[in-house]
Image (cartoon, rainbow, N blue to C red; front, side, top):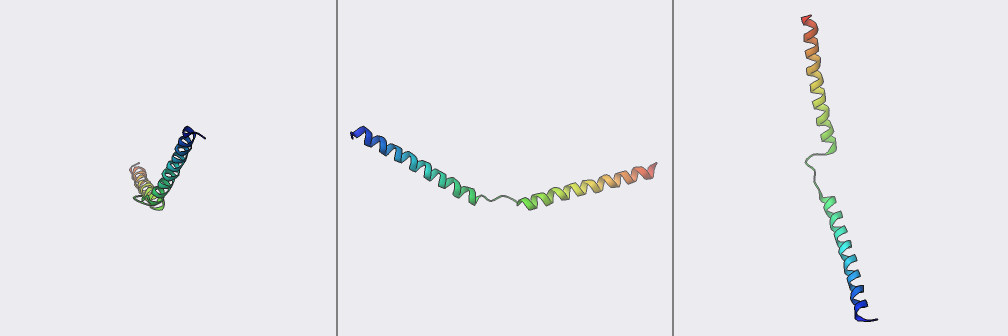
Length: 68
């Protein structure tokens, strides 16, 4: 085994260690990510907006029927 083989082997080990530590860092960051609101809150907000627009449309249609 000559020097080039040993250096190549060390380079491969360093590359795999770098990949491993980068992967672990990404996993840790993914778990710590805080969203401004939960998906449940987001869904409720959308449902509230849809309901409010439905109510206003309903009132407008009632007013149009009364005018006729």
